Image (cartoon, rainbow, N blue to C red; front, side, top):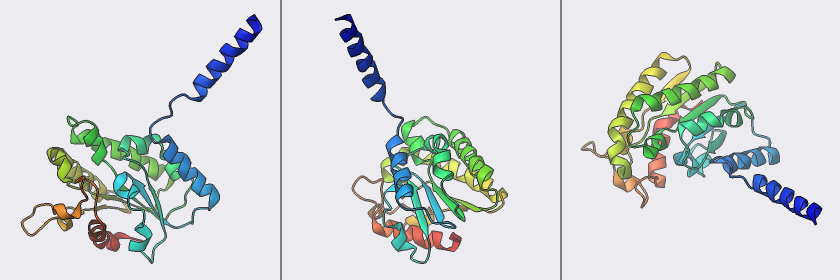
Length: 218
């Protein structure tokens, strides 16, 4: 009886640890690995890395028909997540360019967060990119003004300004500012560019992003 009980307890412990909660976005990363196993990722592509504005841009290749795109936007990721999964996001690929959209969710997770924290998180990820790809083009798309996150915009705007200044000093690096193209003639954000949640964009919003991004695409 004791042996049966011991075996049951061992099985219970094993099941507990096997079902231990995975880190946030772990499954997204596993999905990327599966995709890469099924089809070898192309070399000299443009690698998109970041949060849901990339995640939901599922037809991004249609907007850049003459480019080879690998989209590795995942969930509502933050720059902290990009840093945590940096090896998984960078090591499988040999891109000629990396474009990043991330940082918005860092502020959304903590409305007391200061811009400098987010800027430093970006610099950390940028350094990880440069450690692996010292000479390729690396670009950062500015944090967008989302109507549903209006109260966060003052710190986001400061972060944009500081990241722009940082990228200006870096070789093979650009800050891609999509702020103005999303504004009306009075300088207000166009709410019609957003879906119902006032956070994610419509196809027209992505078309405007495309018009700004195109000159920077390798």
